[in-house]
Length: 252
Length: 295
Ligand SMILES: Nc1ncnc2c1ncn2[C@@H]1O[C@H](COP(=O)(O)OP(=O)(O)O)[C@@H](O)[C@H]1O
Ligand SMILES: [Mg+2]
Image (cartoon, each protein chain N blue to C red):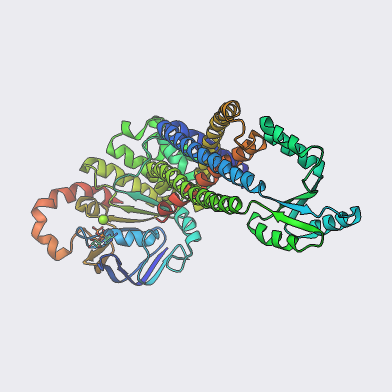
């Protein structure tokens, strides 16, 4: 689904080497966390995938599309094949929940009847069927993020990328949001999520790629937020949390 | 373009204009006011240029003929005059006609002509209108060498002064027009930039969900067209009543002042203003969009 080879990103305006020699392969249906401290390069990696930034060197393929060699006019079609979710939701404040989601289908010129059916369906999935005529200002942070998720998946993309989707949410709400992501992933959608939310990473037991100063320092199947060695130091504090969340996912 | 898209574009324009009511009002107002000001100056320039042409057309060459000339010779001269490239019109003025004109001009003082008794000392002549007033001197020189021509006169000093004045008027008018057009484009496109700026979030979201550039651009292009159409229309209506009032005033007080006729001039001006409104609207929105499309 995603293939990166020796990717380097240097921001031209300030010369910052945000990513250096990154090689990652992500298969269809995977759930991958990109973790690392603030400024390590997580967002940059996400931006390269959606062609918001262009890599300085290397190869990037997303769903068999050559993202680096791609022409400007092909970018919209790349973005239609994936859904995007951000920390700040990026909803249109002057449109209702329904309109925000329908917007994603209108702009790719979907027929009206299909729009109606898909939007209603996807709002049920994220649990906002009742609030489809509300405006974003009338919603809580968690509800807004649900709208954003609904918008991201309404076109049934094979891949969803999310940059700190729980960054503005409290732990309980984050857990609800993660449940939705899990359901989407269970339905076969690949998910790549940049985060530094330790709790959610540890609770999901999914593949974890850790970036430090623009380099991959760890790539673990069923990983935790921190390296085993490091984790030992803080075991007492997070132990109970781990058990609480772990129960559900261990049984799975 | 799919029908559904066209419907979508138009609905977007209407919805966006209703949502950003003040912005819409301000934009259309700006377009109308700037085009109105531009229109006033265009009217001024057109009238200045008209005045210049009027002055120039009064530059004529009088070709005085020798007295003993036969009709055949006169015909020959007339044909030769007509064949000159710079000559547009040749009119025969008989000595009798010239005498009557003189009488009329003298008015009260025509009694001094009575001293001449029945004799008429004025020659027959041709009154020649030239195409390019600048070349009047050259043309006059050529004509003076024709057989049977006694003398040629074109009010030398006056003519040369008029050319200086009309050239100045034309150059000034042209420069003014360029500057004002530039200023108008600047003001209008700046206003439109604000309406685009107000919707930058929406544009960014459209980009993220995979809208093509043209899909994003169309509603703005349409909106620019609507702004230009309405703004241009308002300015044209205002200018028409302004010019007809002004024309009337001038006719009644300065009847001799050659002003440009309202028709068809104001029709041209209307078309020009509406088309430039649309052009600036469309260009302004496309150019302002460019920055926001690069996500
Ligand atoms: N648009 C940009 N221009 C210049 N430098 C940037 C830009 N975006 C990020 N950076 C720099 O790149 C590095 C990685 O940033 P980022 O990918 O946002 O990290 P993270 O998302 O992990 O916090 C940082 O040093 C940051 O300052
Ligand atoms: Mg970030």
